[in-house]
Image (tube, rainbow, N blue to C red; front, top):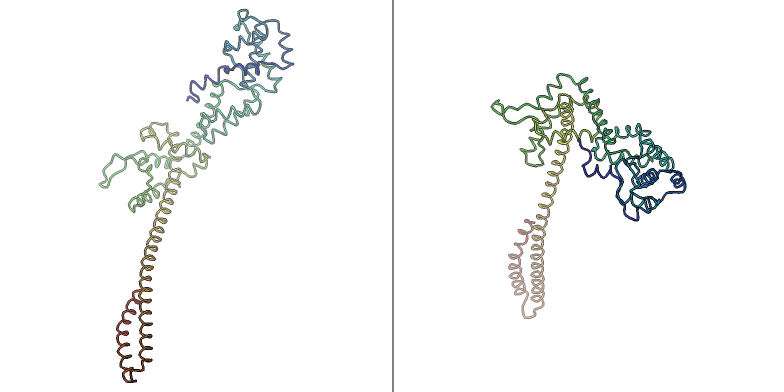
Length: 386
């Protein structure tokens, strides 16, 4: 497993590239360390000490690679030494380690080996949480920096991470090997077999492939298939639940192994070692069980909301229709009122007409009311429609 890319490893393991302003900052030694430099008689040791101190201040670690030429020239000019007088290869390891301890002591840092145990515990915790190795690497660097520990090489830190990952996987495989019953193993193996079609003839579809599907369709046929898949996987989940509790996988761990199965084809899963295959299948069953639950709940919410929207739309349409009908009824009613007022005015005019005797007035009024009655009979029929 390659945790970092080649460029990232190179950036971590090579001395930092400093500009002119940064050289003035990082290669300016405090008084205590300047006194150490003045006591060194060998120009190679003096220059290498200043370079190691400056690079440590910039990157919080020591480097075995050769310094950058511009940094070497700057330090030589600062100390009054000539680059051609130096022999970097003659900088003995014992001398470098002694200088390293002086630098660490001055800045209050400790060696990586002194904090290895705590870091291994932190890495193991992150591995159990199923964080990506790259993220674990960068978090480990942050932890070491925060705890004032000299950073190791990318290879040393990567080995710790890979050892933790392999150790965690071996623990899970051991638990499965010791606790998984033969009956449950047989049920898990059936997921890697081809299912029979309606004619009891073998088909080209694997049971595992069918359980990967998760439809968001609200069609009754698709919902029925999802419910059927949930019932199928429920029995498997009940069988593997005790084993899952013994494995102690977190949600992230379950998702990690399950997504590995989802992204892989059935043949890739089959080619895994037995216990590793069962580990992935147990996580896949649990993940799909809850995923189908969530999916069906989403479908239920979607269909319910669709029904609510349809009911509201029909209610609005009916209200609009009733509002139009009510407007027509009010208009007709106002017309009838106007006609009734006209009839009353006509009756009043006939009653006050002095040219007509009483018999003629009654005849005129009856004739007028008869015509008004025939017109008013249309109103009850329209009110019944409302």
